[in-house]
Image (cartoon, rainbow, N blue to C red; front, side, top):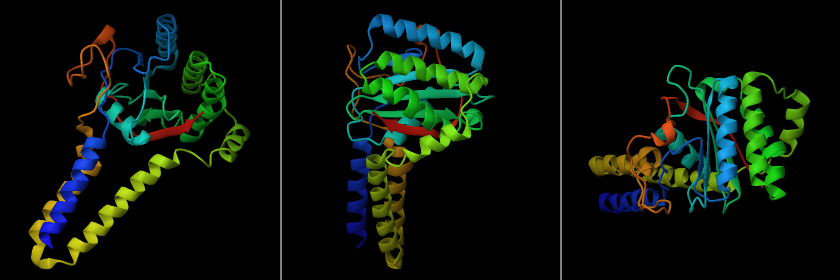
Amino acid sequence: MKKISLIVAIILHSFLTLNALEVPRLSGRVNDYAGILSSSESSRLESEIRELEATSSSQIAILTIKSLEGDNLEDFSIRVVDKWKLGTAENDNGVLLLISLAEKSIRLEVGYGLEGVLTDAKSDYIIRTIISPNFRSGDIYKGLSQGVTGISGVISGEYQITRSDLSESRKSSSSGSGDGSSIFSLLFFIMFVLFSILGRSGRHRRGGNLASILILNSLLGGSSRSSRGFGSSGGGFSGGGFSGGGFSGGGGGFGGGGASGGW
């Protein structure tokens, strides 16, 4: 029984670890690893975000990737902000706008300090009424530009989203990002079953504890290690500090606030 539990735990641990997408290097306010923006569009967005930061007192970054490669959108987004640490340590005022091209997925990750202002509902509204429509019409730059302007406007108080606006947004928010959530729910179900089996085997407590540790490490922390990355001229991404273009995170914290959507 102990051997079977350990084997299953090791297989699950290996699957989750290999399935986790590597977090790319923070190179600036606009990190277009999907290559969906022209150089001039990236430069304009960079300038726009820099100006908006001055009025909203927040740190905003855009990340585009070609594909999640089977990873969970929300899980990958959290790993990105945990590593990039957008916003300041004092105010936790960072915001990440993540785009995955292959899945047509959008994620808005909001720092702790902004969750009371840029709420989940308002984040959802910005995605569904501003970013997604522009993306569907093929204008990625406009969607990102107007999306960032909306984010900054909500934070600064210049852009008001009413309750009726939010009500309309909620009516169309039933789909969300179900596929990724379903996969993650399945993994937790597997973990629950394994724990139940291990719990009934008192004689194999040591083996059960080791299996539990492996599973928890996979689900909660081990996924940050990865053998997969994004293609670039230099191979993979280093895990060092982020100083590209003088832009780096300031130690801001995130707790999963924000919203997800698509186009």
